[in-house]
Image (tube, rainbow, N blue to C red; front, side, top):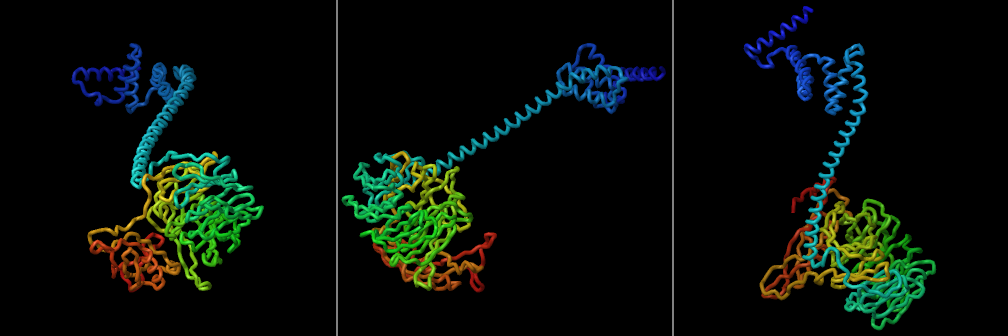
Length: 618
């Protein structure tokens, strides 16, 4: 009783101090403030002011005093009344940490906890759900922003590509069908233009070849291929003959374009299939490969007589001549590209070589299509989505005294495939553009980037696209203005690809102002294999003249860091093309031009290897 009286006296003394000289609330001892706040809590509850009571409870929690159990229980009941079940649950949890069943209100707390606990858990789940929804909404917002930015970037890129396409004369990215050739009764497996540009030839599984007028698209002739469907077609470079290779049978058929008369047909092995056949660049020979037995044959155009036959030794996919006609290549699908090097004069095998299409084994590889000057080839591996650009390398073969030709990867191009398997690649318009056919039936045109090292992978962009056949690459008109391709709906389609015909750079021989010789095309050198075995870079200082038609001659290597570089450097300059020197409006000889042909090697860190000792930078 005495202690209670002392506390009351202290409270009255504090109140008297407030009345006489009011101090700040912070100056009052915590025990006194706690007593005041507890009284305020009781008073607010009596007045029904739950918010005021809750505010006083929060102030009491901040004091450095022990929170009475009855106040915690009061707080729990206030929070429950205001449906703040989380705060009520937390207050009851604090209450039960120190309260015992002997405390006044303990049973009431047990009853309240039984009600509050499931409500608290439900509230927590709602909070978690809201937070998840907020995170997902934020994630969706950021994703939408990224997608919007990506869409803008794609549209900007598409605009740049379309501008580039229009600049180069292409019609549009998605080309509309210009004409449809209807008349076949089964899938059209191949379609080609004549090199003269006057006819289109289509072949089908319906065992016919059809010839169409390239301007009116009217049907000119139907040429039967009895007993076999057409696998591939070719028109001779001089435009005088049509060649068809057929499947089951199999057979080769040769017709005259003058009157579409059959000149001859060749029966193959009954159990085999002709994979492909084509003319040599001079229209005098025909090369063909059979798929099952893996045989390659060279025949004369005149009567189809066999000149040479040899076993490729693997399942061939296709066959190709270099544009100069002095090499025949065969590709196989045994995860490595294999080819025989065949001398076009004697058609005897000079050598057999293996070369890989990339850093991975391939399940499928298309035949190489050679560029106009025959110095490069293009091929595609189905896995990964890489187009391989190859460069021709000539090596002396001492046994035959002839040059054996190899191909080495000069650049790898990454292709956006979207899950569709590549089927064919080809050169379009010299070496400036490439053509890619995909398994979804679309054909794409892309610009070939500037040459890089064999280890580079450059992502390409499509300039034009149309729905070409997946069986064979599209056939292009000689001026590259139109493309034709077969389809699986018994028709062939024609697209207008370019608004202007493609033409190679032409020297202006009629110029009136004088000028010096200017480089028009410079082909990079091929690195000799023996040089690649070394551990340094090299160069040759060259001297040469340029003829009035822009062709380098009298080429000599004045000095080379390595003897092995002399011959290749001379070959490199001889393949260059110049605009001739103009004097008094006429092209004249230019003498004494000098240049340096560099052979730069790099280490694993892509740093240039130094030149040999005693040689400085050129």
